[in-house]
Amino acid sequence: AQKVTQAQTEISVVEKEDVTLDCVYETRDTTYYLFWYKQPPSGELVFLIRRNSFDEQNEISGRYSWNFQKSTSSFNFTITASQVVDSAVYFCALSEAGANSKLTFGKGITLSVRP
Amino acid sequence: EAGVTQFPSHSVIEKGQTVTLRCDPISGHDNLYWYRRVMGKEIKFLLHFVKESKQDESGMPNNRFLAERTGGTYSTLKVQPAELEDSGVYFCASSHRSSRVLNTEAFFGQGTRLTVV
Image (cartoon, each protein chain N blue to C red):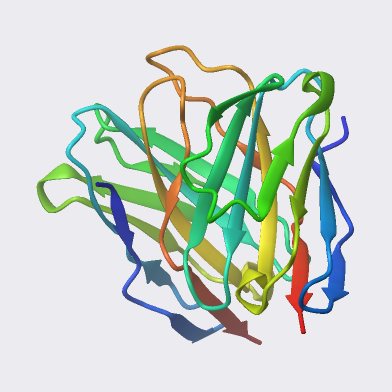
């Protein structure tokens, strides 16, 4: 069975601090996909990134970066120089490859960025 | 292009009543998913449509929940009769049909917050 663990529940930082959101996953599949979604106060889940299990390259997109390590089954997300607009709930998710790409989510991490 | 739209945004009903949630996916998306988040817990998969067919309904909690997708367009999720434990946020998502190798990302709606009192 697949499982995603986001051990941190709430994180509070001051603006401009860097913050890392942890994600650990479990799966028996050799091919799978990892995702991060952001849920701002408006409620919708906003897609941030998808990473497949064969690509362990780290990715950077502006102030966001992701560190995928298969050896530790982790897919951590770092926000550099955080801003108030980054305040949201962040979900890590996992899906197996194939036609039925349902997502298995973690519990989410509530990030609060204070001015 | 319009995103995934869900109606209503909030619903408060009494135990035993019926509620119908609606989801309009992104135009052209064959895949449509329903998920639910109970307070403080994970977002959990309920079911998956490919066009009008139910591909996987393994996450549906019981037979009080009925999902339909008329003509492969919008979808409804009916809860009848509602119980207290059905309270939560119900999310709908849609995506393009995926190949066996490449998963396409799902786009989510803003959710319907259901409160059963």
